[in-house]
Each structure stands twice: as C-alpha cells, then as structure tokens.
Image 1: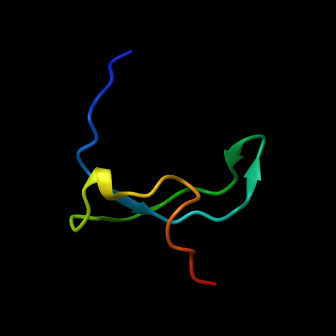
Image 2: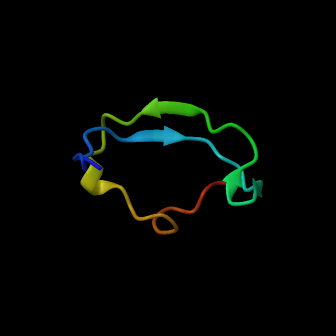
Length: 52
C-alpha cells in the first residue's frame, strides 16, 4: 500500500440510499473545489448541514 497526500477537494452529490454498506445509486462528481485546501474539509458528519 502506498499512502498519498491529498491535493484536490472534490464536491460530490450522494443520497442516503445504501445497500449492504455501499451507495445504492451512482455518486456523481459535481465540481472540483479550488477554493478549498484538503486541510479545510470538515470530517464526515461535521460542518454545514445540507440544505433540504
């Protein structure tokens, strides 16, 4: 295994449908976030609440 340093931040769109631990639907790439550095990304479950 080779560990790498993250260099880009990508925004993706997912829904909550999961089946046996995997996303049920495809997870599309929305955009690359050039306004954010990898260290600025909040941990999963933290940060802003998605809009309803």
